[in-house]
Length: 410
Image 1 (spheres, rainbow, N blue to C red):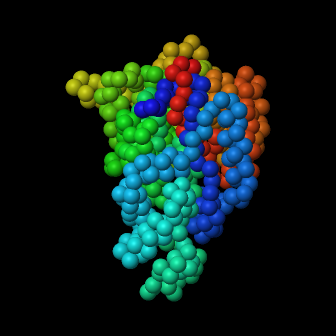
Image 2: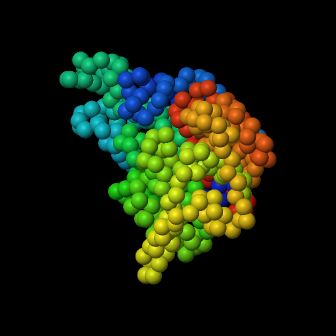
Image 3: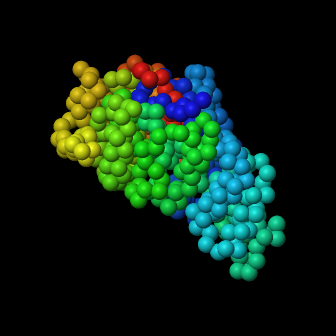
């Protein structure tokens, strides 16, 4: 089976989703590294795994196949054989910032000694500290005298959020240059999937991680077979959006006509478009109150000679969505029922960062009880997932899951 990506909607019935079950990368988080690694707290791994399993099982109960990035990456590397395994490890170690040839060799030998490819991939994500190399006698000189708690290769805790390193658009995908240096390695895994995995090696890419401008999947929402919305945010640059739009319109195998670039504040609290707005039904969006103040949207379409035509739209966002989605009415459902304290508290734990499983059915953190009840009052079925530890990473159900296959019609 080839090119098994299908995503023309945020709300069409979900059939297959990509996730990452948290692992030992959480055990390598410390208070001193949280800021650098873009995590706000240290989750308790055992409970985080239980919560993630509950989320995955809730999706399975709704008929959704759950695929894990560690499995796909391992299958791709194994399909490529020894040469690809070596290439992957050398690239991963280099991008981890290991510049000493001797230390790089020690890291390579250690990782390559892990025979099971899935375990090797998981270890790459978890990181390597000096003590592990000392036990193997694979450290010398300066490193031999260092604190055993020093990480030689940092963990990648944010890979929990599979929405960000890549996105699926139509029958194609994007592979991202991440905004923060600490997250750059997250997209390596799908790079090898798209190059070597027998199911995905001919997927059309509309953006590649080698491009110079950052873009992240939390800003990309496929609203219809004609329209893709993208947040112009702290982590997605305008030039990246332009390059993506050019590649998307150039592919005449799809019917996408517009990219709507929504200018959101360059702040961590907004971070991505999906932290302030996600679609929960054909005509309903869960929104954070601040999205109502956004007044600038850019319509990007294909002009003459393949150049982009960009038109600045100053209009109520609700009216813009009604126009481009061909709807008589769009309903905004506010985080925390629009009450300031409830909205601020539940926005912090991703109250409107929701994965739509099918029209009018979403997965949501149980802790956001005010927003969940508000959604129910507006006719949306909410499947609650436990969230005491998962929510510490500042990402919700939408962040943790990337749709690989949805039905083509909502």
